[in-house]
Image (cartoon, rainbow, N blue to C red; front, side, top):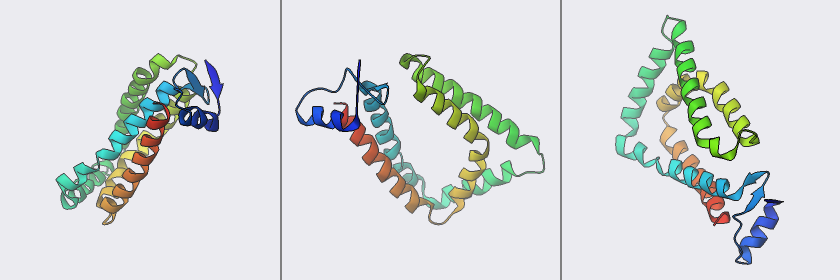
Length: 155
C-alpha cells in the first residue's frame, strides 16, 4: 500500500476517490476509519452521565476513592495490575489484524499499560468534581469531531 500524507488523503477524498488501500502515517486508512467510529461511539457514551445523574456519579467517585486509598497499600497495585492486564489483552486483540510490527499497537500498549494503575483513583476524584459533567460533555464533543473526521476521511 502506498503511504500518503494527511493532505494527500483529503485531496483524494475531495476528488471522490477512495482512500481505502492507502496508508496514513504507516497505518491503513481502514484502521483510521475504524478508530474514528470507535471515538464517535465513546463520545456518545456521555449520554450515560445524563441518564445516571451527576449526584450518583459523585457518590460512586467517593466510594472509588475510599476503595483506592484504603490503608491496605496492596489494593491500588492489584487493581492497577488487573486493569493493566485487561487493557493489554484488549489492545492485543483489537490491533492484532494490523500486524505485529504496528507502531500504533506498540504505543497503545505502552500508554494503556502505564496509565491504568493511577487512572482508577483519578477517575474517582474526577467523578466527585462538581464540573465533571460539563467537562465530560466538552470532551465528548471533541472526541466526536475527531472520530467523525477520521471516519469521513476513510470513507
